[in-house]
Image 1 (cartoon, rainbow, N blue to C red):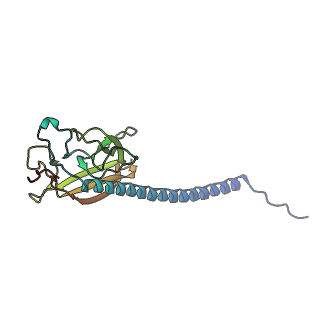
Image 2 (image 1 turned 90 degrees about the horizontal axis):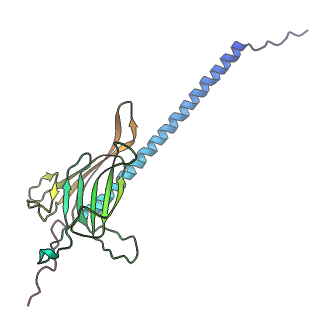
Length: 237
């Protein structure tokens, strides 16, 4: 008579299930870590791309900044004003200026390549404490170069937007610039603009209370630092 097969006890079954559960947890943790690493790399890449696109657009528009020296004899007939005004702010400075960088998007509209453009920090309406970099553009020039037009978000969740301006008279970098005030900067543009854009890296670490950042820096030469004064002289008799 053959001996009967040994039955699996309840304790052995529980041990086997526990080992299988531990192995499953380890495998899930490994795959979860790989997915988190992949998502983190993709997130950082997306933020770098967003910052580079924003900085490239700012550089293109700032390099085409201009002032117009064309003024009517009668000041009451003045209908538009060009300006280049920069003010400090936290965490974002503000810049309002005129530029030849406007691109018409609609056919047969009464617009040129001139525009009023502004960059400034704007509170994100959906997240408290998050500041976006906004861009205002108006193709209709008027006497208020800081208002009007359309506002869009240029870069989301910024930590810093800092501007400095190279003064051709002193060779020093200035933190403010105002072509409309009766000071040394009246009616003249800086030679260069240094732009620092710092973005939150896309991952806020609540444990440390800090955040990873992406820092982008560039210097932009202004192509027309002097006011445009062509055709302002009278024709010879």
